[in-house]
Length: 424
Image 1: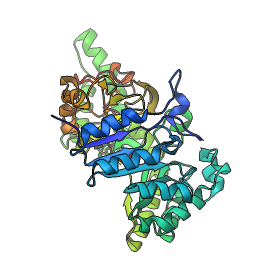
Image 2 (image 1 turned 180 degrees about the vertical axis):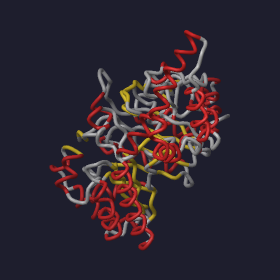
Image 3 (image 1 turned 120 degrees about the horizontal axis):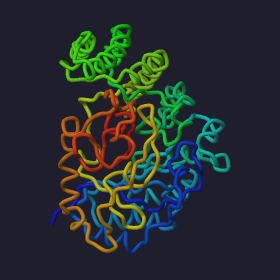
């Protein structure tokens, strides 16, 4: 019987906040609900003895599920060795709730804290002001060692808060927390795209563009005219060949170039450099005090991509039993990336209310999906450096295919590029 080694189970997709960057703001006609406890028991029973990691959260606030502590306890009683974690907005994690969840046997809890003070936090995570989130974090920190629980903070990085990252790291150290995990903003709206502080271009491509910008811009235009000249007159000015020779210098190092995306990165160079500086400051503080950190890249690298769900042999199960490969493909939603909008369609391989997880996991379609992404940089293209990404390419409008022929495109997934992170 074949089963995943890790599972992310969504207790509910309901939430008590309205965070400005949340994908739920874009849902239209999506059903909301919470996982039936009997279905949850069925999943845990089937995976007993094989599950190394269990992430109990999804696109809702997990603690709004009335039986969340019971979910933790049931998984713990099924296996002493399964590592159980959750991510919470912290609003409902009072000391009393923390004692219940910690006592049920959870291993790791992360509070989503994007600012060190309530004022900005409540602007980012709208609705937070009516709760004592920072007080809840402090209370949980005081009792975590009594239950041998790892406690930390997750941060979504954007223009609003990147300068506060070192202060957040100090806050984590002062509270005696164990880790700090930082992810860039995934922009589901055009407004949120303007708040991002990273580039999807590879650093090598950006540096190449910066060095050769003048020649590239002029030759690119002349190469287009030269191509038309060749087509209609069978003659050439030679500009197309000169352009290709110049770009081949970058290609010989294994990278390609999108002029528009690299130009955008150069224009934002001061911002990107400053973001790197603040990330380095946070890393330095963490190192000084022994705080574990997971920090994002600011530039992508087309040749160093990997899928965390594939690497950890994971699947995700939504509250209604749908089995999906990852968070990004869990719900249909818009995405703004590489200077263009697109639609990400939900990808479902089966439903554990009607099928066993083993049957879904072992299906030919799911197996092929995972196999293709084991060597992501080789098997899946990267649009951040592709010249067609800003030319209305057929493959970037919807994630149904990519230009390598893969069904379901992961060619613009910023999780794979180390820009966005999820705790699993």
